[in-house]
Image (tube, rainbow, N blue to C red):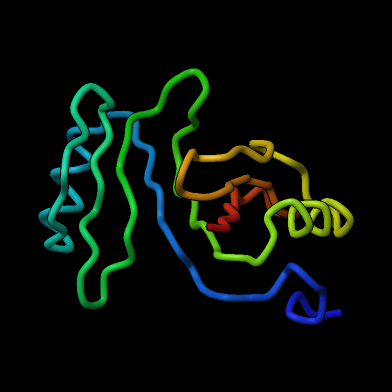
Length: 124
């Protein structure tokens, strides 16, 4: 059964890309130069927001920590994060980061697929 056939799991589109690097400042300089991204550094967070624009997916670039692994996570917009995460687990995925709410913005979770890729889910 395709994801769009399951209530609450309507397939949409990538909504956010999150890059976590061993050296956040270096990664921000690299991607700003490579792609021409305009970045807004969040004071005290060692994280910068990628300013959306034509052809640019919104996202952020941060630095790894004991709770945040190096890598790239693409978040996909879904109708219901909890249902989609449960379905991913039924299909063999494992939960990487459980469901959490970003106050005033939406709900997120991350799972690992069969190849250990980290995939994010987002619902506002």
